[in-house]
Length: 325
Ligand code: HEM
Image (cartoon, rainbow, N blue to C red):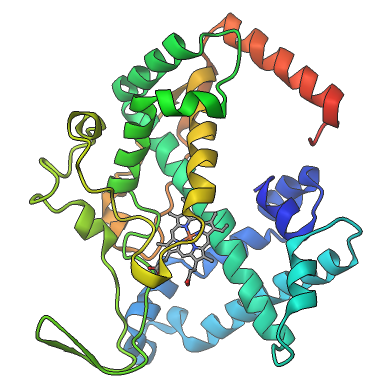
């Protein structure tokens, strides 16, 4: 987020966490509300709107939520346009097609924000949760980091190609906990046919990524969290996490190093511990978006050597770029 918001809106990275995530009007939380189980169900089964007792999932509530989201985005758009620093919003605004309304522009910005920020945050949460609940697997990655990096410096992008267990861990998390278990819904613009099935115009198509990732014909013992499978068999097909075909996620190359480096740095410096019963998230794999609560995860610095390196690097960075660099 501290990378993406400055790029998107030219926001001061220091204000991002406070205003947008934890603040009372946290836009991110409002937007996440749109993916709540209630709204997800309504999206999947629009007829539920007419079922008595499902007032909470009414179209009116959905429309109000969209308005709230667009209101937040409109504020950010306005601030970004006034911002003297370069930002993607200004570049987009200057090049927007003449017929593009302000509302359409906001919807586009909202999609970018959701796809760029929420996805990275949620996939990192999934990884942290799996590390806390599978300490043996986390320690295997840490042993690899200790050999390659040691405790006197932080991991860097140059280390990433050598960290096989790290990549296997991340791959296994995306397999068992894709951010979008049901994929992103699509609808055909005209009637089609696939393997003898008629697909009507406008039908909602859900690419069931979680189902593909837990198919035992492809992945042996599919429900087990077993990162080693990626090292034992490098020819395994990558998990479905970024969609397919023409609409495949364009952010994939952008995120892979970001996620790998942030996980490498976290595992390098901290032992993650599950303090309580972290809910078994498999039940939520039938939602549009999977979010894992981390309230029961504690992080402890791994050694005084790691702590000294973290403090030294933090001091160097603050001297170079100020507290928010
Ligand atoms: C771990 C991180 C991410 C995951 C798991 C992810 C996943 C996905 C998925 C499943 C889709 C739907 C693909 C489909 O319709 O078949 C998608 C679309 C998209 N993603 Fe990502 N994404 C991630 C990060 C990003 C980032 C960082 C950006 C922007 C920099 C981004 C930009 C987009 C855009 C613009 C689309 C819409 C593409 C279209 O509709 O043609 N994503 N993403």
